[in-house]
Length: 114
Image (tube, rainbow, N blue to C red; front, top):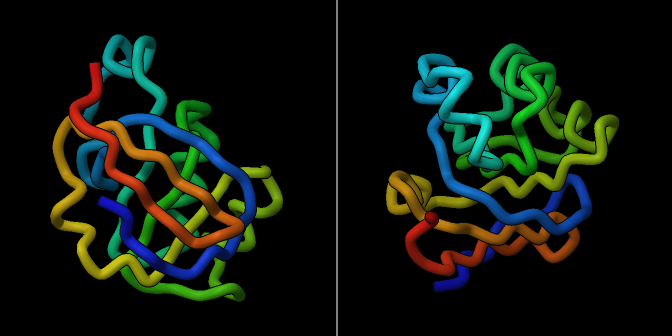
């Protein structure tokens, strides 16, 4: 399944989808084996900054936000792919392997992550 959004930070990354809430509560051991794509309602500065500074983030997917939002600016600054306007974000939760293309604005669900 390919979902079209708006690319706000270029690059391609793949990993496991994780909600912003789950990101904040997961243990360090969980992240040792998983590259994570942060799923967020919006690109608020605090959510994206915390995830970026945690060092486990490979991409950001958001329902809301645009090119000039704080989170998009942070993603570009740190070279992290970011796609906004993804309306089916609730369908991405769980242990799914996802590929994000920040230049094309696409989010492709590849299947269950291992």
